[in-house]
Every structure is written in C-alpha cells, then in structure tokens.
Image (cartoon, rainbow, N blue to C red; front, side):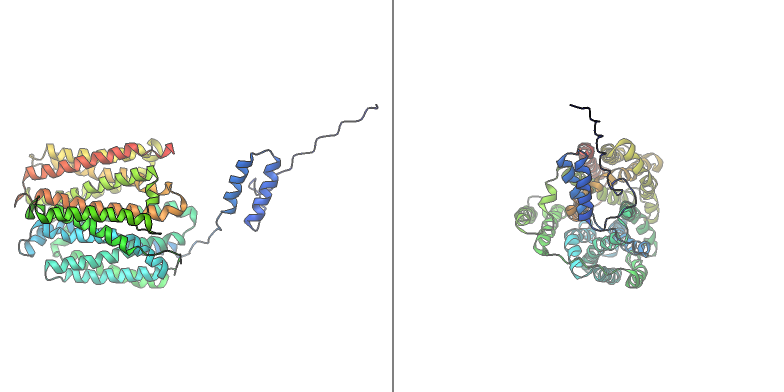
Length: 513
C-alpha cells in the first residue's frame, strides 16, 4: 500500500452571529431556533439543554416600543395610588376629633371609618382589576378617580357618623379600581428593562402614602377633619383631566369570569371577624353576637376555600399558595401589617389621650416614622444586595418588635426623646427593611401567576390592617379612658406579631430556590 496524505479535519461549524452577539437578525423565532439547533447540536451541547434554550427563544416576546408619555402616565397613576393609600392612614389621627364631633362616639364606632375602607378595598382589589381588564383600563381608571373624588366630597360633607362610613365604603370601591388599574396602565407603557425601576417607584409611592398619612392628616385637622377628604378633590380633578388626554386605552380580553361570590365571601368573613373584635367589649366576649360573628367568619372562610378550588379564576388562587416561599412572604406581610396599622393608631391615641398632645403636636411627633422610612428606603436595595433578603426581612420584623417593646418599658417616662422617639425611628426603619424583600416575593412565581400573587399580597396587607385596628380597638375599649396599662397591652400585641413577622423573614430564603 502506498502512502497517502492524511485528510485534514473539517472545521467545526461556526455559530450564527446572533448567538455571538453579532449583527444578524432573524425575522421569526422559528428561524432563530432552527439556526440555534443546527449550530449548537453540531457543537456537542446536550439535547436537554438545546431544547430548553429553544423553548426560551420561541417564547421570547417581541420588543415593545415605550410610550413617549410613560412618565406622565406614571405620575397620574402614582398620584391616584398615593391618595388611595393616604386616605387609609390619614383618618387614624382624626379618631379623637371624630369622637367629639359625633357626640362622644366610642372608639369602636369611629374605627369603622377605617375598617370599612380597608375591608371593602381588600375584597374588591382583584375583581375590580379584572373588570377593568375586560372593559378597558383607561375607562376603569377614569371611573375610579371620578368616583373617588365624588366620594371624598360625600365624606367631607357627611352630617352623621353613619353617613361618613357609607361614603367611605364608596371611596373604598373607587380605590379598589384605581390601584390595580393604575399599575395595569403604567407597566405596558414602559419597556421591560425599565419594569424593575418602575415597580420600585410604585412601591415607594405606596410606602410614602402609608407613612405620611398620619402626619398630613394631623396638619389638615387644624382646618377641620373634613379637609382630610376635601384635599382629594383638586388632585382627582387634575388627574382625571390629564388622564383623559394621555392615558393609553388598554384592553385585555380574556376568557375569565369575575369571582364576585368569592369577593363577597372574603368581605363577609373579614367584616364578621372585625366586628367580633370591635364589639366584643360592648356585647360581651361570650355573647351571642360576638360568638355568632366568629362562627360566621369561620364558616365563610371555609366556604371560600371550597369555592376557590372549584372556580376557574378565583379572587385568591390556591395555585399561588402552593409556592412555599410565597406563602411564607404572605404570612410575614400579614403579621407585619397587623402591627403597623395598630401601631399608627396607638401612637396617635397615646400622645393625645395620655400625654395630652394637641393633634397638630401629635402628628408632628409621629413624623419620625415616615421620615426614617423615606430616608432608609433608598438604601434598602443595597442592604438586600449585601446581606440578603432573609436578613432584611427578619431585621424589619425585629425592628417593629423592639420599637414597641421600647415603648412598653419606658411608657411611664413622659420624655419624647427618651420614650417615644427611639420606638418611632425603629418602626419606620422596619417598613424600609421588611417591605421590599417580602413584597418582591411575587416575582418568584411563574410569569402567568404574577398578577395573582400581586393581588394576594395587596389583599393580605389591607385585610391585616383592618384586623390590626380591630384588635387594638378591642384592647383599648376595656376602659372608657385608656391608660398606660391598656397601651402596654396593645404594644405587647404588636411585639408578638412583630416577632412572627421576624420568624417569617428568617424562613424567607429565596436564594435557596
């Protein structure tokens, strides 16, 4: 046999330039995936990895052009959300004034001006958002902002406490339309790469509304409690006029059914449980009315659990609750806002009723709570990046517990710098630390469950706020004029639920998934 030269090995096929970040653009996902298969299969990549990457390419969404008016859309929707959250917490500082104005009404009666708002909003957030998806988000938002303004007029002009509570229910329906619809208008107006920034701004607006509500409410009380509601009118008019011109008309038709029955069950269960706590002192803890409300709450909650498994699109989907990490975050949010809502009300009533501060002085004394939150919120992202979401959430719950424990220990010392200020700073810091990691748990859900997770999160926050106020009201209603021992009992309740939020934070470990 003669000698033959050895044939050189064929060069490995080069990947298309789109795989290497070059300039070739494939017109369809199918062309893109086909090129990927041919290039990567010959390069020896595992079949499972190839299939996984192809599915990602085929599912890749088309790049959407950002709305040139997107920042104005965010401003209009952000103002609406701020007003809705502000009116939730601004009313807390008006409790003593409302008691005097409406003929020495009891704290339990006046508390329904807050409870009615939170309960109705919590139950209707998800159905209202889905209704707006079907009928048009712009129409839903404009309807909500107009109704919110009209309800604010009715609240400010209310001649009786009962009329004020009914007007607050209407205001809550409007707020339930505004919050999810506003976010549904904002996100599609931005490119996907901007969504993280937008969500950070959106969350900060909600936190600012919650934290600044008592301070602004206290300042407005100097002109009369009615101005807490009349303040909304010029902002709603401006938001409506600008929104009519610039908001995009987005409609998301989907084969979904509104779960009004499920919303009614949640509303009824929360209202019954709240009534049991609020009225227990007047009715008696073992009275037929109190026990009947507890039984009704348990029965309605059980019926909703059965209903949610059968309904094709329930208000709170059992699907999101199967995700262990999301359940932990939801529990932490629920426990934290039990303490937060009760803490805001207790601080106001304590400063006014025990230390005899005027409402203006009391609102200024509470100011370190929102100020510390606003100062620390921009730094919370760095804290999470360096120490992790677990540490941030756990420290947030611990800060709430330690702040309320400080008030228990130093309650007998009537010194604002020594007794009240440290606890107020810790309470504000707790919001900045705990809220970002736990509210971000929705991002851990599959993409098709993000809206369900966001709705469940908002519902948990609103429901727990109502229950926190109800429990504090029950504690303080034991005497006609609550004293140090009553407030110590209320703060002890906040310490307990703050520790529960801390435990939830310790179990919240997204890096492990």
